[in-house]
Image 1 (cartoon, rainbow, N blue to C red):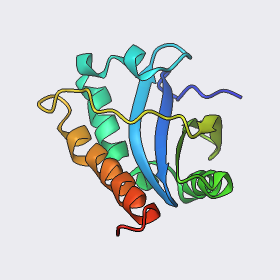
Image 2: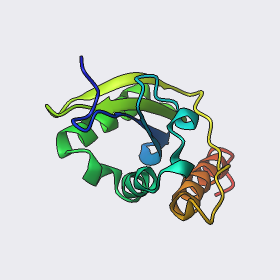
Image 3: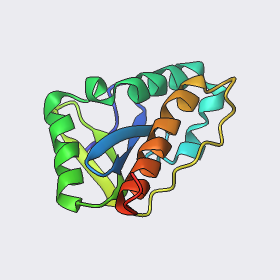
Length: 140
């Protein structure tokens, strides 16, 4: 299945699950099919950062309702307290799942001056995870 976008770039979307909540974490846009975030070099391309910012602000708006429902179904089926998935979306309204598991790293290494949107959205994931831990420990 072709996952390259109409503009010739590959996009790998990463979403994180905390309980039954889904959060956008990052978007890698690359010239090569092997779409790792570090390969995407978003610091060198303002348009990539702008597209990633849109995804983090409203991933359900970037995905169609059908695609968002598919992501939510993966989250529900995995039934993990914490996990994530990497995927692509296709022009024919499909989600292509690359991987989904509990081994997704959550980091925020990008400088706030260049990636202010990441510093707005990633802490929300950390906060949800902290709340989950407190609830599981009976402290919330």
